[in-house]
Image (cartoon, rainbow over all chains, first blue to last red; front, side):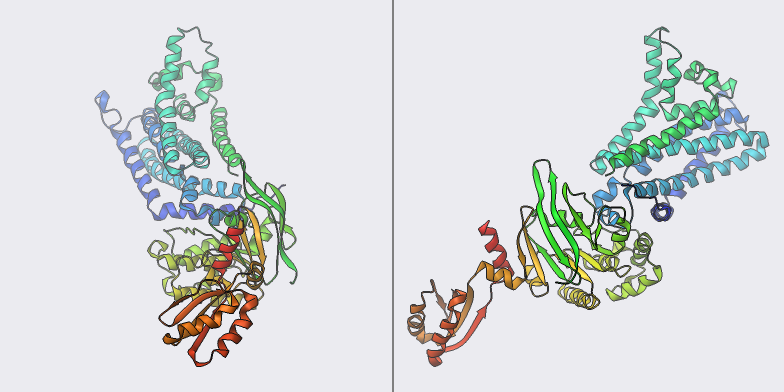
Length: 274
Length: 305
């Protein structure tokens, strides 16, 4: 049986989710954290090298990437993990589902509203930083910086999508939060170490063509490659990036892979949310 | 019965080896007030959720107004239904009015109707208060207002008077009576049997996923043939006279304390008993005849099974 999608219904759910996050000051709090971190990192990021102040855009972005790669996945996972399981546990899901709405529309609405919340927080805070950079570094820097903000937003959507999937699959909120944190550990802290370990253990016998594929299996790595590959002087800061072939470093390919990472978990969620 | 609005045919719901709903056949007519009773776990809420299309049936079919509840016209079906779930949970961070606005949008109902609904359930004064600060009774009223959005022709109310004070319960049934004047069909469950027995047109008693008994309260009572209960008040000195009067009727144990005798009497012996008591003259001061309550009927069916 095919039932058409009604976008008005998705909008109703998304609107509520978004307003909820505005009202409980979630958006404001996250935006404030991002703004402060962005400015501090942009200005003091090179303090280890014995200097403070505004630096070239590539170094600034490289510093911001290392912040965002930890923070955004965590925030997105925490934002989305109880989207469905929370309503189910509180008991409001039955009433919601008794409305003239499909489960798929509920899911998309939830995702859309939360994506809006994290999107506004990301774009507003880094946008503010962008204005400052534009003032300090000029318009060509702004182009790279916009790419960074856009990819940061895509990264947040990847992990939000994973979180929404967890919120459908988990039996209760406790488990959902546990799985969300575990995913963060795995993708952000453990995955690269595992890959490096694999490289070392295999003593170079491993087919290096296979390696970029493994990197593509982690949205956080895609984000990193997207943002640092263009800048040779920062590549050396990230060991794994040097094994990444230039042919695969096409921003469109990397961007599409991230979009796949947004769609796939949502697809699983829609399939399991019955 | 008028046209059938709800048509349930051979419906099963299977969870592993357990049949939560086990071959239910039921039709409910337009304009009926229908009660669904049964102990916890009898399958009432599962059947409710299947009627709403929230759960797919393992077998069988449910139609509302001729449309399959999970078919292509499900939106149309849902818009014609108001639902008040058993364990109602609303959004604490929204106000009463915002809650109605949210559900109105999902139901495609004009939001300008919301304040009047809040007024109807007695929440006009709390429209802008957050639901977080509502009492249990107020939440239940808000849930009821939500069910009334868009003037549905069919209401599914799962334990609707849960959490309401006696005044609230009376108001609830007053609103229900008004809605029935407009031809609204109501299906409700309640565990307070005394409360629904005077109000429902028909009821179904569910047990282990099946409908064990179906009919008017009166018909269910008669089918069970439960005895009437009598309280006879007599002059305290005349207990012997009373016992002699009642002896020929073979009534079973009679408990006589402080000038009041209580005993059960089969329905067929009622007239003979009244004649005998009247003949006993001024020793008998008063007679109260109690029909078996729905609780008794309910327990009777439970023992039967």
